[in-house]
Amino acid sequence: MDSIHLTGIRCYGYTGFLPEEQVLGQWFEVDVKLWLDLSRPAKTDNIEDTIDYRRTISLIQNLVKTSKFALVERLAGAIADGILEDSGGINQVQVILSKPAAPIPDFSGKISIELTRSKSN
Image (tube, rainbow, N blue to C red):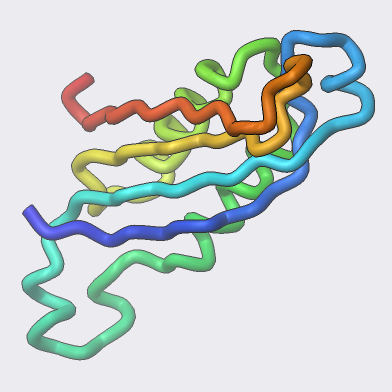
């Protein structure tokens, strides 16, 4: 199966366990891998034969911006479900959602959630 990668999608959102995370918000980074059949657009060179990347990026940005979940796991699941529901051609999606500045004392790394969902799940 073919795939498209959309990486480095930065979004400001309000998901987090701490109450201030849901009020003040923070930056998130999203990478997605979309599995679909790209044989037709590879032959036709016609944009109508593939997915609209702008639409998928906008969907991700909107979900991050408007959701107020306690867990990033829930937000990652909502992104995966949203992409699968929005596009008929995508068979499977992988979402990597990162919190680059998690409010954890003495921790300067980032937290990432990776999940994969398919139409059959």
